[in-house]
Length: 368
Image 1 (cartoon, rainbow, N blue to C red):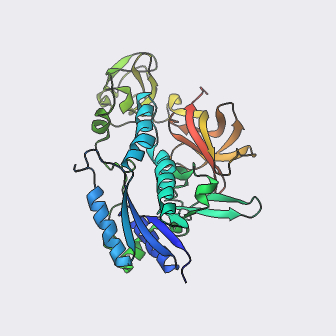
Image 2: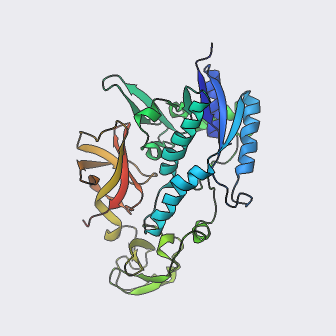
């Protein structure tokens, strides 16, 4: 007897493919759904939509499930990409995966799946959902495989979304996922994981943004105001960036800490159209103990009551102990240890042990 209908978001990658197989093995009626969310330059070398669809269809054939394709390109452009460009134009660095999950994968996709008669949806994310009897609410937990945990990207999901979502891969390790794919003969078992912009793919990022943003070149300066180079437009740089500055020949420059060390982007001065750069990974301007965040979103539907929590300000980062406090616009975090290159526009995600509580968009980084 079927455990119910589950619509699985299938991207053509190994993670979502194994997700579909696991759920079928568990007794669910599984239907695959391939989302096409980008149409600009769809025939370019960087957009792999056609091949991804072929891979997803091939996997569905091997597993023995039906698969449909749906086009969310208009929703993606309106809800995700437009905001993505607004943030870059304002000098911030957004995280499109966070917005994409909230607006497309767990909103447009979820709504479509429900119209297909699904009781649940599933994706290949590495995270877990648990119903907490004490609070009567669903919790978002880190994956068992902490090296692949993606709860950071999912922190804006709410109770309604989590109550209808399955994350089968949250309980197993990535190495096991690859082993399962090879054992059951999936044609994409050795396919490389995607690391590009959500649904847009891997491409030269500066060239891509260049087509959509207005920009003006300007000076690269040290904190003391000494010009050391020329930037091509503030939108094309992010805090902490080291590559692509083209000022490596100034290693002996006098007047900055860490003579002979690499240069990093430390700040953007929009009023002057200047990019502030410093030498040395541990330069004080790259280290912050505090931040404020707005656009707060909490998994439980309410802000945390505890003050002593942990948070991360970028995906590839360990949790860092912090003091949480509410603010008029959202919340503030004060960290025990300095955080490196805290970047406005990125997400500050708050944790209580294994539980992802939610988070917000980094707005300001007060001076230490």
